[in-house]
Image 1 (cartoon, helix red, strand yellow):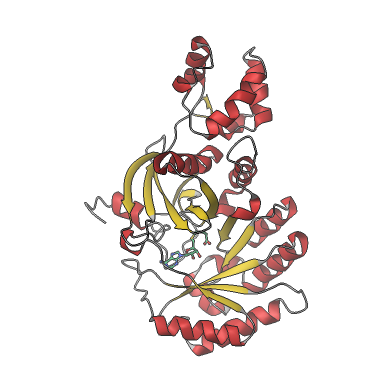
Image 2: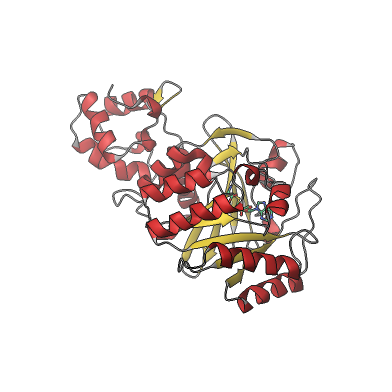
Length: 361
Ligand code: SAH
């Protein structure tokens, strides 16, 4: 069989992870005409099962069932916000692992926040996703599968993707890049790169690798602190890639792609939300990007309190004051609206509750 070994999962071809060209080769290796691949790629992207592909001969469908792995994430639990219609999915994958995706409804269309790994090994102290460590990377098919499953379940099109769910996308680099290229295919889900944003805790080397591929996606950096001392205390990744290394990679990313970078800043009461912190943040960003022409954009969010972390959510006034200070310094600051507050929409919390066997979340 002419399928790249990295596309074989548990002895079966992970068919949804194949590009149209690879799908052609696969069909040729089965002595099937190429046009079958052209027919099938869009069907797979819509989540049509082999059994439903009535345009295929029965024996071919049976052969595909046997040789391929093609299961979409199953809805294990679904919570719908009464406030804003946000839907939080707990999906079960082919091997029983669970991940979360969140469907958010905006005027400009539906956005799906997807997970990139089962668990996470980055260890950010405030984050629920990292508590049990990393279990495994998601396959390109499982990244696509979250979108396909959410579209099937909601009956609505997903037009924007944010990679801000469970996991560190740049720690699953190859699968994530393959996913980005697949989701963009016009024969498939056809989601434009400009409608995709990827959030990272700051793996500087991988940021450069991403720049080298030069996809016009939006990059978000989870910054969360203005000094190395403060950042290392809440984000272990900062010991490997301190602020200067991270900013240097961001400058390269901007230089290569010309894409605006946004910085995520989670406000934690008493830790990083004072006026002195706002000043330190404005100073470090202004200094790091001086002369580059890069527009500076900071997204502020009040921390979601995760049991056991001890981090406390500050007041609305504190976040507004923080935003006002940054604006005064010429930095665009937006306060992120909290969607799905009643469905525990913050990342990782539903999966944890399920893992701990709690009846309700
Ligand atoms: N690993 C990636 C993407 C996943 S987390 C990253 O670190 O960017 C998505 C965003 O939610 C990140 O900015 C992350 O720092 C933030 N986040 C995680 N836990 C949070 C919490 N309890 N409250 C507020 N933001 C949180």
